[in-house]
Length: 259
Image 1: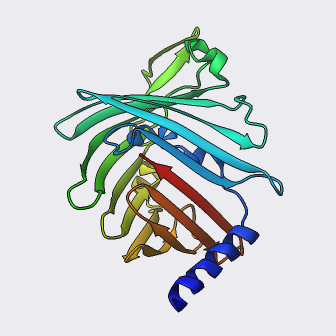
Image 2 (image 1 turned 30 degrees about the vertical axis):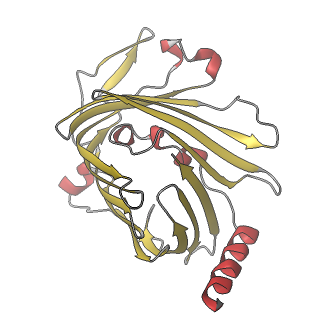
């Protein structure tokens, strides 16, 4: 009972003093490698907005038809719910664990059929797979090893064509293992720039979440050299986490649900 009360107080404190995160980080579809091998059909995410009493809600859907993957998502602000935010669209092909995918965004739903309105897509390929079960209790797991490059395609006369001067080293590599059965586990290791590695500057970001029953402890350097600690609670369809940046003192939180 004391443990439950302590966890409740920690969560309330985090939700009270937290600040928001970048809206694009709410959506899996904003990254092409996350368009494939996903255990969800619908996903919603909530974070605090830019001002007090305002919240940002991310919603997205995913569909896999015989290896053809489609995802679409956007963000809205509570309390107005106006769909005037960028819409992220992704598609990919997966077979035998291998995949190739791309994602982009368009300013609004009204322009979703206008290809010339899209930003230049980011392309990813690699290995990704997931497992999902409902035997005894619901659980899922996902593995990803991907290469991502923002300049495989370029816009020319309103159309997207292959970039004939592509720099294959101007790209990132991502390794990610995530699961939720008796508890939530996450390990992500990303090299943001292969070019920097070749030039002798090895930079990376990483995240680790270790379960203690439904509770999990988070630690990592997710964006830069800043250390971030966190505490979360999760099951197969729900995840809530609060994070504290030890360098800046910033507190953030995020709640997500998927089915």
